Length: 117
Image 1 (cartoon, rainbow, N blue to C red):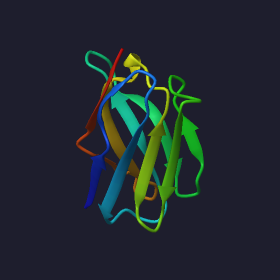
Image 2: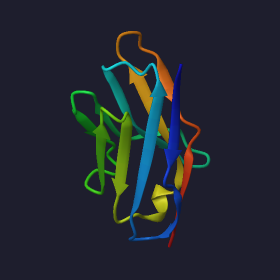
Image 3: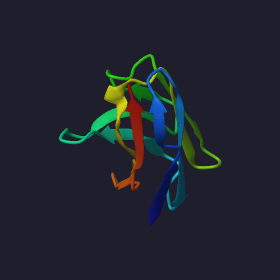
């Protein structure tokens, strides 16, 4: 099984930065896609950013230009640096891992990000 543990959320003011981290454990496979999604109250879960084991990156439209995703394949971690945060970034941020060979998807429990104006 795969476990994902997120950290780094919190309460910040608009314009500030946060760094979220996710550590994976278990049978993650060497070929996978890791990343972050978020969900605000009353809204659907949306893509923030993903990066695969070949370092191909995809950013969500609402955060493009303000976030940077990076991973360490040896440590099985993925980090999300978020800059110039706005109240619209408030939500529960989930780490996600997809294993390519069997298409299994795993989610972390989420870490709360709150941005005050």
